[in-house]
Length: 149
Image (cartoon, rainbow, N blue to C red):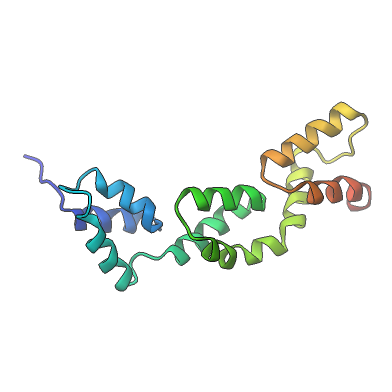
C-alpha cells in the first residue's frame, strides 16, 4: 500500500532535488492540495525558514542558463517561473556583464568563421538570436570575428 505524501513532504522533496521559485512550487502543490488556499501558508513558512527563495532560484537558474544563452532567454525563463523583475535584475547583473564574451564563445563553437554571404550571415544571426542574444551583441560578435580568431 502506497503512502500518500503530505503537501509539506512533497514540497521538501522537490526542494531537495533543486531550487524552485515560489510560483513554480505553488503550481506543483496545487494539484495535491484540498483547496486553492491550502498551499499558501506552507509556502510562507518555507520562505520564512529560508528553504524557499526566489533570489536563490534566480541566481542558480541564471548561472545554469548563462553558459549557453543570452539575456533575453534568461530573463524570459525567469519571468515564466514567476520571478519578480527586481529579483531578475539582481540575479542577472553578472551575466549581463559577460554577455558579449558568452555570445562570442557560442558563435565560435558553432561557426568559427566569418559568413561569406548573406545567407550564411542570416543563419549565424538566427542562431544567436535563438540563444537569446541581443542584436547589438550579435553585430559586435560578427564585426569583431576576424580579430578574435
